[in-house]
Amino acid sequence: MATTHIVKAFDEQLNLLDSKVAEMGGLAETSLADAIQSLSARDSDLAAEVVAQDKKMDALEDEVNTLALRLLALRQPMAKDLRAVVAALKISSDLERVGDLAANVAKRGMTITKAPPQASIHTIVRLAALVQSMIKNALDAYIARDEQQALDVWRRDAEVDQLHTSLFRELLTYMMEDPRNITPCAHLLFVAKNIERIGDHVTNIAERVLFLVEGAVPDEARPKEDRSAFTVVESAKPKSKSKAKKA
Image 1 (cartoon, rainbow, N blue to C red):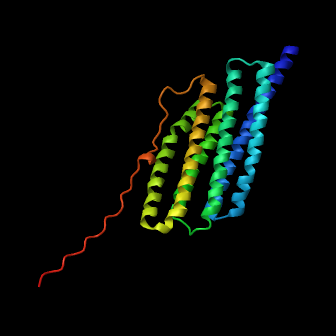
Image 2: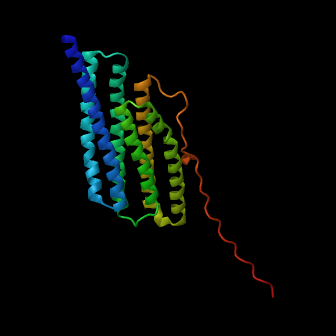
Image 3: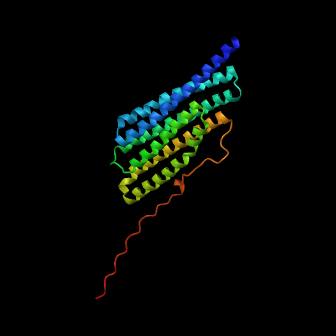
């Protein structure tokens, strides 16, 4: 009877750990959505709310760390239970970084609202929507212990990289076309990179889920398609003046 009670209490603590990680995930997803909404709607008040919300994310990570360390010290879990505690610790760390990056997006948005609207905002929204869906699917995979869904998220990081590279090239082109675009486009470059980095952290989460369920990460190399570091946009060549005809 005592053993059953101990096992039940342990299961409840593991479930609480899962719920705290899920709460962090929901907050991370909301933070990114609100940051992008503040950017597209040019809403500085909403951006400020996203920045302020980062403290709640930090507090939740502290709760996860405290609970996980207590479980490790008092329960000494083994096998899959041990992997569950370690995965929760690592996933919470990735989610805290997602919160930081979403706050960075919101901060950039406050500055961008002071400049004329940029056409690239629409591509930024597409990139963020892709990453938001990855966050949701990664968290669903974590709660359901679904390795196939986690693997799908892991593979979609290449799609994020491709779109980020395309956006990087687009913004460089706008900057070269008109010097007045340099400041707002430079801020959008940072926004795009922050979103791409969120995608990397979500891919990390997918790997944690695969390790939790299978005890190993994928053998294949992580798919990476970010070519922004090698992107070169050539300036337009000046038009040659037509030679005057000789009389």
